[in-house]
Image (cartoon, rainbow, N blue to C red; front, top):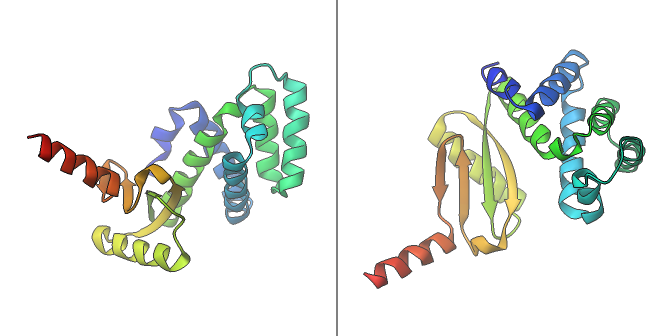
Length: 184
């Protein structure tokens, strides 16, 4: 696993690596990945959940109880729920997004995929996602796993990040370039 040493260097990476190893050993990689996807979506949608994970005013016990209730409500698998409990007890709930990213990186490396962060102005359809993954595979020669984000400020087009490589075909960037060219 080529990424594990770099991931271990971060706090969130150590939690993600432990979760990954437990999930791999228990043949639960898919269920943990699905649970983390559900949690990521819930964090994006719920201000209350964001406040719970970010607020230093929430005590350990209250955070642990609240996160346990969240895990049950969202139907998260037991490994993910236990990891969230450990994060709550260690006052590390703010690390959840980074843990999710690190776990996704480990999972992609395990599956032989390259991970691409894709930002678009509007949600991509399944057909568009498949076509994009196919085009990126043709470019890189590796299977692609897409992390999709919607940002209306992109206006149109896509911004794709793969490791240190970035492809920016967004309308915002094109308009900025045009404005710069017109200034002289």
